[in-house]
Amino acid sequence: MEKGHMIYEGKAKRVYEVIHSPETVIVEYKDDATAFNGAKHASLEGKGVLNLAISTIIFEWLKQAGIASHYIRTLSDREMLVRRVEIVPLEVVVRNRVAGSLAKRLGIAEGVTLTEPFVEWYYKNDDLGDPLVTEAHIRVLGVATPEILASLETQAQKINQVLRTNLHKAGIELVDAKFEFGLTQDGTLILADEISPDTCRFWDTSTEEKLDKDRFRRDLGGVMEAYQEILRRIKGVQA
Amino acid sequence: MEKGHMIYEGKAKRVYEVIHSPETVIVEYKDDATAFNGAKHASLEGKGVLNLAISTIIFEWLKQAGIASHYIRTLSDREMLVRRVEIVPLEVVVRNRVAGSLAKRLGIAEGVTLTEPFVEWYYKNDDLGDPLVTEAHIRVLGVATPEILASLETQAQKINQVLRTNLHKAGIELVDAKFEFGLTQDGTLILADEISPDTCRFWDTSTEEKLDKDRFRRDLGGVMEAYQEILRRIKGVQA
Ligand SMILES: Nc1ncnc2c1ncn2[C@@H]1O[C@H](COP(=O)(O)OP(=O)(O)O)[C@@H](O)[C@H]1O
Ligand SMILES: Nc1ncnc2c1ncn2[C@@H]1O[C@H](COP(=O)(O)OP(=O)(O)O)[C@@H](O)[C@H]1O
Ligand SMILES: [Mg+2]
Ligand SMILES: [Mg+2]
View 1 (cartoon, chains in turn yellow, blue):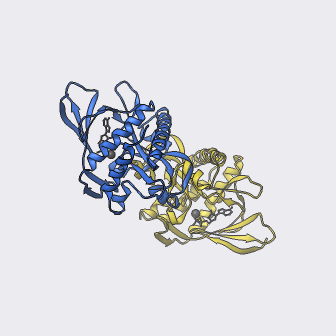
View 2: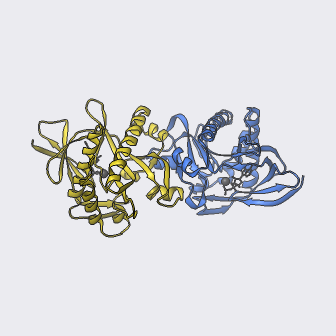
View 3: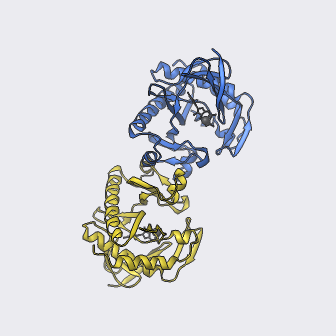
């Protein structure tokens, strides 16, 4: 396998072509940390390595649960081989407990448990600051049909359940998670991107200590220690 | 009929009890103009009188179309007798063309016509700045059941159609409108509040000149002249 040109550099990862393999790409995890639509920026040494290791374990869990994702295999401590997809420009957020922007929007205390997990859509668009959008908005934008939305919602709910179950065994509560999905060449919709403390809220089950990117966003300190702790805990899980 | 105590003073209106008539209230239209959640404020002489006259005509149109509202009759140039309701704390916005916050949120040019009008929900809460909310959010807030939401959506779409048809005869295009609904004592959900250039976007059908509160929000001048023009035009409409 030969790494080709870089196709895209995002805030946390770089995406490379694979020579003679147009249906795959290599995703390289960087150490860059950003928050508030890029307004806050830092380099956290080793974050890329940790997020790749965490994402790998989580994608393996999903594979075992029969959930399709872009994940093929991990190539090195920063590189993952994945199926190339056309990303649907929606951040699919599943909420189990109230936190972050949801707490702010609704004026509800962080930590309130939701009766049922629900999905929110955010339009993935840096210039617009990834706004919350409704299904009617998505129809206007033309970024996903109602059928695709229904499928995204079903998949996100399933993934959330698998994650919650396995994380629970590691003493971690999944407060919320952001997923990205994409369409393969043959039109299948699969989970893509990463699943890590950068994209989920992970709380210690008993102490409710935050073990995720909120430590960075809110200057709580111990960011890398928390990511390290997540990795250490999920390594031991029998999925 | 005897006007009782003031129950509530809002940004644009005052609400009074009616002595010996607990199921009605008197709504008094003020001249205060506010925008951006109260950050911009002015007094526009005669606005209350114009908005009351415009609202009266529009509520009469709706009555003729068989649509229930709080409107009973207009008592003076600033006072309307209405059925007292418990307001559902949602702003029900119907969009026919892209404008205002929708244009900003989606990064779409103002004026784009929507294939089908759609409804948006905003949580009526000044402290939170009236945020856009989804149906899942509304369930969490507990401010309306899914059945009430379905009824609100159906009513809002119907009202929008009646308004569009009648306004069209007056050379006015309804770009969007904000409705408030409330529950009567006996549990009926009816249209309440006002329908005026403060709560709708009205554009001249041929020139697309703005004849509504955007003239105030955007400092375009001629605010009261525009409201006067709306009143003049709709007075002539045979509903
Ligand atoms: N399997 C895939 N195929 C193609 N692109 C992908 C795949 N998985 C993730 N991506 C995209 O790779 C880009 C790089 O990731 P990231 O650095 O997180 O970007 P961003 O700054 O947009 O969040 C993102 O736009 C993401 O959607
Ligand atoms: N029929 C009604 N019964 C009770 N309250 C009403 C009725 N119609 C409107 N209201 C309420 O009267 C209040 C005064 O109006 P307004 O000045 O526009 O207030 P706001 O500043 O909340 O927009 C609003 O809260 C509105 O919801
Ligand atoms: Mg990303
Ligand atoms: Mg009002």
